[in-house]
Length: 138
Image (cartoon, rainbow, N blue to C red):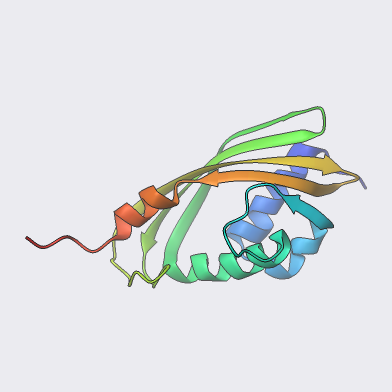
């Protein structure tokens, strides 16, 4: 059964990002997905996501994901989202702060044959890091 692009992306966010089922990434991404905005040194998109999700879940709990906008046209799906969470574990070298955070991002996907084949994304990592950074002394 074929899914439309918006349904595919919504299911991706719920299954992988919210529930943490990284073992199901292959259901959503084509094996040769092209990531147009990779982080420096990032492995392929599927491996990068499989590494990021457990790290994010370990650092932020409880967490709530809101898909603010999901729009589709001509084989592309765009999403703008935000997370609300508490910083309860280490993240990118910053120990748990106990602070509440809000983290925004946007992603665009190209869909082909019921799989995501191309990705562009931007996330406010700098804003997230400012929220969890230790208070400055002095």
